[in-house]
Length: 188
Image (cartoon, rainbow, N blue to C red; front, side, top):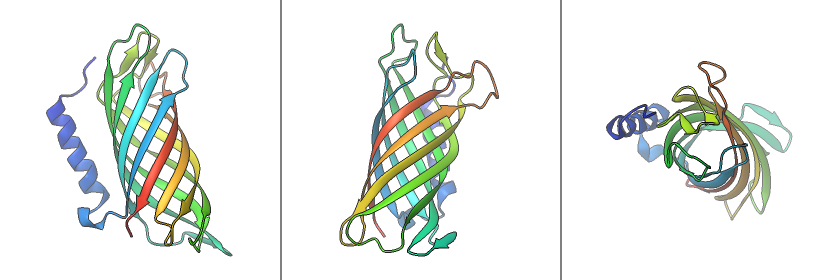
């Protein structure tokens, strides 16, 4: 079932980017993610690009560590390889606030852990008859961990486990899970 047109999807991407920051030049980081679903009745490869805007403050200071965060907007392409598929691809846009626990000093190699819950819109609500999403609106939550490195901690390699579903807003609500490898470059 096609939910919205390509023109509406482009408009939504622009709105998400503008909602995240009043100035595109204020982007603090860019990331690419690659992954695969581990959900039954779904074989989907995910390719995602995102931009981040750091909150630039410590929410909690814990000695040499702190809890901070950032806003993330993303655009994703799902390559559906499922059996008896109803759609070859799904496009996704999203915005997510992310909490990150990391060291205060980012020299050398620094580990981190993160958690995010955000909002996503998908272009189609079905992969096949056994994997349907009920609505274009989806919640996306993830847990992740990784390492930052470089002389200013500008490079970032991480892993995320992400679940998307509509939280029972409209059935069927079968959702999907992804294992993701994330490569990020911090500009600031």
